[in-house]
Image (cartoon, rainbow, N blue to C red):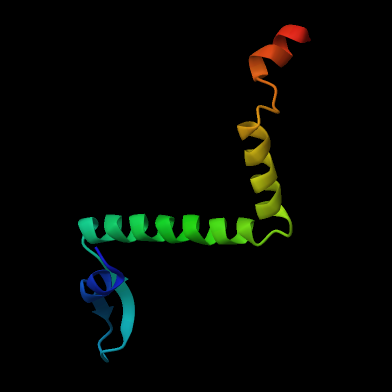
Length: 81
């Protein structure tokens, strides 16, 4: 469900003067909104991580080391401890 569809399914509770006091969603719409917000948070968190100075470069260097076989397996380290 898109943001627009979610917003189109909001029902408002109004007071006697017609002022909006609360918003109401059907449960399936609420669940879709929760999924939408979690996806947004994940995307936002990813963007924040990628903005850390040097992180992208460090990830690329690590990837290159793994491809070149320059790594130690956890099992090997544990065995030698």
